[in-house]
Length: 630
Image 1 (cartoon, rainbow, N blue to C red):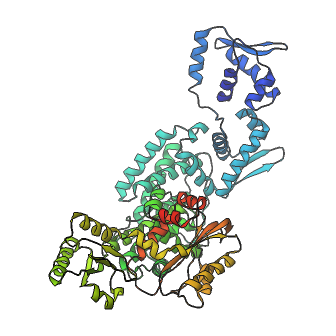
Image 2 (cartoon, rainbow, N blue to C red; image 1 turned 30 degrees about the vertical axis):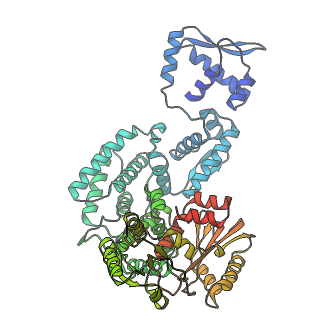
Image 3 (cartoon, helix red, strand yellow; image 1 turned 120 degrees about the vertical axis):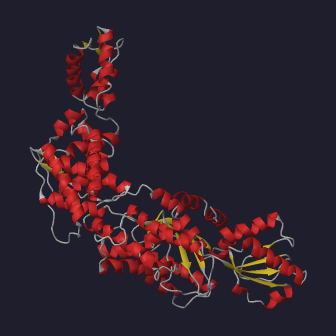
């Protein structure tokens, strides 16, 4: 009995007013015939609970309560029953759970009757169900006179059940047992055996492993078994094998089910795929780095060095960290084992540059495995990059020039104050007066701090401070040395003349050609600058989502570092995603201490859908500059 719809039908019936079958059918979204049939059923049901459905020709139907106390008790009781949902999303998920947990064919008419919905409503719900199934490589098989059922690999069915239903406690509605209590009991079994066999899983991996074992147990209980291809299975340690074997024996004995060798091997495989960063310890005999894995790590580090000028390629510690992560990652990729990343949104927001580096370097993995890398996986790689980038930040020290025209004594005093107050941020301090500035090579410094106005145009930021370096001056200099001058950085890389609008959508190549022509007219770039940009586009995807693409030359092809922003009138398909904002960057030959800040600001903007939307709504340079400062 579809309790939710029966309750809805009884709620539509009034005690003091008749309603026709047509009115009720319109409100419920079903046919009049269905309403009449259900009204008869409702009458039989309510007659045992203090009420009845009264009908009157040409007037319709109304609810007649005979025993109010008995009827109220019945309503309270039925409100606690598991309802069949009525919203589109809930109905889709209920129908998905119903189909995926059954082996037999089911007819559309029976589904309509069971869920108390019209054929049209069922068709709409099935369309959503099929879209979800497709993401898991599953489909609905239809046979005339038999009905429909879910068709696909057993492993993919289990993936779907883990993702969609176990964490939402939805299998309980399909009468597969008391899910929450069963999972808690299973988790305790797993935890006990992990302690006994000294097997380690992180908290998140432990939860996911328990969920998978739970689904495997339920599927085996209903006669659904995996068939596993034996080739290319990862090497698993003896203690892990013993752990899985005893776990399956306990499940088998308790429910009298048959656990096959394939099921045991797959749990071992799943266990291997859930090992994550930090789970592999030194001298662990179970951790084996293959030559191909190390090559992938080196290729990723090489790309990070080439694309973002980050000195990772010779970083042995990071290479080993990547190798450790790539071992279980390889298992997950080859056998399509999903990995959730609950920190993904926070990683993209707080570690935008690290995420962008991970996204770009994962092109090595996309090419190797010939499949897309999920955002969840990219997020974990981003954490590895962020850790090293944070270490590099602590090494940042600046060369500065102090300009003063009040004599050598004052100059020495200022130099002493800078060393005392900002020694952690300063590598070398130069001191000169205005005359000395004429011949000073400013390319040697990152900032100029001056007590007098400077009219000479120089290529580094100038900051005016007081001769006596008061509290406000100290705070100003400290903020700049700690965080950099964002305004100067933006003007330096993204000048107003480098902001282009009103560009009509065309092919990717034509848009890049137009931008490169503007660049050639305004910047010192190599003659083959455009060809270098196309070459880079050919070997890596430079569209990041959020309607943003960030192309750049395949090698250093300009004297100075810069970035051009082109806002298109309409989005176009770039490589595989729609793009409306093109940020063409070029890192110059000259050394640049603010390069990482430039990358961070650009990545933060590109990964913010809200910031991109604001720019598209108001495509002006000052808006873009304000969004970059956030």
